[in-house]
Image 1 (cartoon, rainbow, N blue to C red):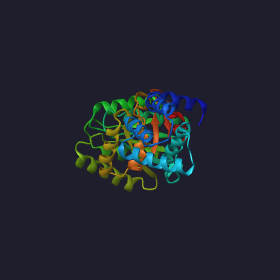
Image 2 (spheres, rainbow, N blue to C red; image 1 turned 120 degrees about the vertical axis):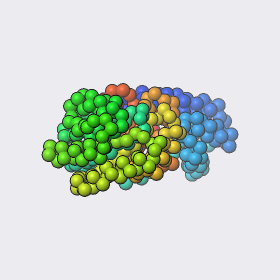
Image 3 (cartoon, rainbow, N blue to C red; image 1 turned 90 degrees about the vertical axis):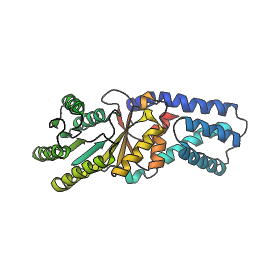
Image 4 (cartoon, helix red, strand yellow; image 1 turned 45 degrees about the horizontal axis):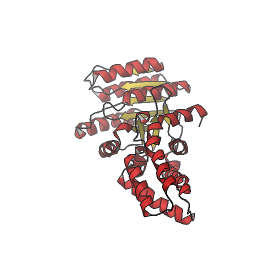
Length: 304
C-alpha cells in the first residue's frame, strides 16, 4: 500500500486506535502475568471498540491458543500476538473474495439513506475514471429527489455519464436505460444507485429482484456484484442492518464509510467475522481519494 494512502488510513483510524490500542497498552504495562484477569480486561476493551460480544469471544479464544502454542509468558508480547490474531481473522477467505478484474462490470449499490451511499458511488466512479475506465451511473434510487440530484453532482465532479429519470419513476426502467447507454458507449463499469428503504423489506426485495431480472436479460454477459454501504459510526447497528439486507438479497461486499469519525472501527472485524462478507472499501475521510480498497494487513497495522 502506498505511503500516502497508509498515512490516511492511520489518521482515519486515530479515534479507534486511541480507544483500543491505548487502553490495551495501559493494561499490559501494569500486568505482571498473563492470567484470566488480563483476558477479562482485554475482552472489555474489545467489546467497547464495537467488535461485539461474539467476535470478541472468538478473538480471546484464538489469542489464548496462540499464547499457549508460542509459549508466551511476558505480557508485553500479548499485543503483537493479538494483532496477528486479528489480521488472520480479517484475511480469512480473502483468496475467494479477491475481485477478479473483468473488462466489464455492474455494481448494484444498496444501503439506507444517510450512510454515505451516493458519496461512495461518486468516489468509486472517480476512482474508475482515473484508472482510464468508461463509467456510467444509474440514478435508480428514485424515491428521493435529493439522491438523484446528488448523484448528478457527483457525475459532474467525476466527469462520468449519468442516466436519470424523474423522482418516483420505476427504478428498473432507469437501470434498463442505463444498460442500453452502457452498451452503446462500450462502458467498463455501470454503477447503479438503488433503494435505500429497508423498513419495507417486501418492496426492497421486489425492486431488487426486478432490477436483477433486467440485468440478467439485457446484460447477462457482464459480471455483477451487489455492495452494501454501512456507516461505521453506528457500530453494532451496522451489523444488524447488514443482517436485514442479507435477508432481502445476496451481498457480495461491504463499503464501510465514516471510519475517520468514529472510535467504533472495530466493527470492521465484527462484520467480517459474524457476517462473513468481505469489506471491499473503507471511507477514511471526506476527499475523493479517501475511499480505499480494504487491505487486512494495512488495516491491522494502522489499528495498532
